[in-house]
Image 1 (spheres, helix red, strand yellow):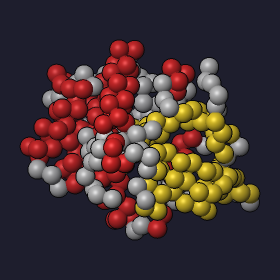
Image 2 (cartoon, rainbow, N blue to C red; image 1 turned 90 degrees about the horizontal axis):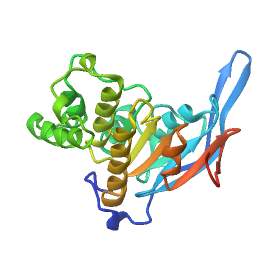
Image 3 (cartoon, helix red, strand yellow; image 1 turned 90 degrees about the vertical axis):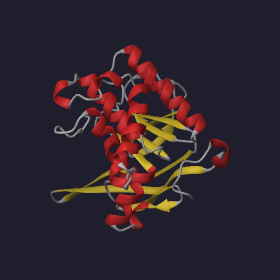
Length: 241
């Protein structure tokens, strides 16, 4: 697969994310704690999937495995037809930069950089010229209502504004897959709606797949599918109230 963004028509029906027998076991003293147990998941290009579940059910562990931030005890995660845990750390870092965007529950912005510099950072790390990277970053910041705050540093922004910058940073590379942990938790209704509209556009035009962990019933209901994580496995939700 090319490292450049592809259109939805090119990738229609293609599996963008695949988990097979995904298992994560942690050792707690003399006992093993199985957080994920032979979990199975497929997400296709352009598809948006919400994952819900009680606190402690393993949702964050799942996101970390899907993004290659953690390695499975058993099974595999395949993104854009690449098995993540078989890559070296350096190769995995390059792959994440080009194919995976992250939006964490807490923004993780760099305090010494402006909003624009934070949003452009993934492109600069990739080797893109700063001027070109910041032009693209400004386009995305405008889409999330942050154009007028682009020159401000995180300490000068509200919690909701920092989250919008983090979302722009995740989307700036035109990733194949975006992983989101409570992405609209700190946003007002109007801004949350603009984020949903941007997600809709990216899934439709760039075949970007989304996996979103959330407790927000409105956000979950807006996605193509809602899955519940319980007992280490995912099941379909007929509805989410």
